[in-house]
Length: 621
Ligand code: ADP
Ligand code: MG
Image 1 (cartoon, rainbow, N blue to C red):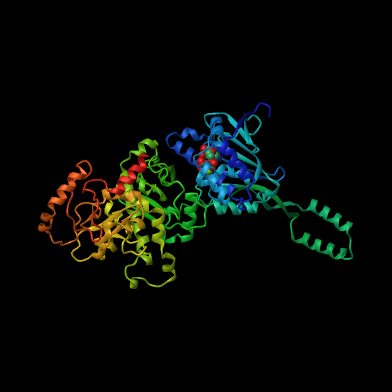
Image 2: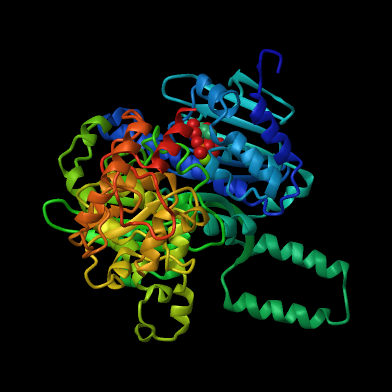
């Protein structure tokens, strides 16, 4: 079009589109899931605005919050329309082309290495999957604040935007027209589409309709029909003519003079039943349903099951229903953005109306790896997001969610046969086989979050400490827990011993360990940089203090206090302290912590450990 404004895609977006259009990825179906998910998001947005301002919905059909799919077999167009919030001209330019999402380059990289497009939605670039099946796409959109515009692109590095003066007015919302590629004509098949929508959109909360053909019986006057029948009979006349005429006569005598014929008509067919899984009784929801629900909620369409889930109803002052999931894997950017994002992964609903998925008041940061949904009847519906964010019920909800989340994780450990201290605790069964090693798997993906929790959440510190796993000088490369450590403590041992360093190999050689090992004490190895911070917050557990064996004050139970020994070496220690000067050491002491090594540099009780100094140095560099 001559008056269209032309734009270039942002470079990363352009690269992404190139890769998609040339992709050999076989599961091209995913484009439909992405478009329906976008339509549903847009409907959520307008429904949310309508809570405080009914006017935004308009009247008649405009107010119907629905998704419509239409096929044009002749023009080879598949179109999806929603009555959602729509996009202004500016939105179209920004959202569909010029501003790359943070996940864009991460996804391009991932696609180049794995060729797997399935997770496109998770990276926030799902829209571009349309180019798996289309070579030309039009996005027609009408936002309440702007005129109707058309965005169009052939994925050749550029897109165009024009004010829409030729299409039917949408009222409000967005229609996406896919001009299907020759090899994607299967998406013009109604049966295929019905199947896909059912598969991908089971949990979409808005009705999805297909403009579907239907064979109907139509009564037509028998006269007309008869005459044409007669003609036919005449033309291909056969020896049985007489008999047939007789049969016709019989019918005429029994029936009125009309006849039914098949005719094809079109009507909107509802494809989904909009089931809200969280409102159902947990006993009646199958594992498969939870898995599918997780996939759609998390936009995580891998094959894997979530590691665990918890579905519950909270009663009392604040009523809500919730489903929480532990994903099968940590997302690519879980800790990358940890300190500068408040993104929680919980969706908040109030009486089935989606409010937000950016409520950081629902879960603390360290649990942001969980996915899930909360639907509350107690929260008010007709207030702004800001007001809601300050609502007193949120505190209660958060408290309960944390409890339930930690219970769910504790169960993961309890049910894991590998975690059992005694063999006889474990029944042999297929179910137990599946659960074998599940906590180690959890720990490897999300252990750091538990540690951050210990640092951040004083209230639940003890509960979180129970979930800690680590290796020790005696654990033989296996993970162990504080409870297990305590059960193995020697009689007379008061403190829990640990040492920090950069690797297990380094720690095993540490002179600080010599005597403890000789005396058969077990020492915890903390090798993660975060462990240093962790141990500044974790002072004790079950009435036992933590003692860093590289720090001053190490007591190995009842030790003989040899005053004489100290006395006889007094001159040496004094001389040595003088040589090393006060700036370098605090004190020089006779120690009983060593076995073979003659001397060792120890950190004072309240000073940084050597490992902490190492970590801080690497951070300031
Ligand atoms: P995401 O949905 O993860 O944000 P997409 O690539 O699927 O990423 O979509 C990009 C953006 O385009 C959306 O965030 C939204 O702003 C806009 N968008 C896409 N489809 C629609 C639609 N049907 N109605 C309104 N806005 C839309
Ligand atoms: Mg999307």
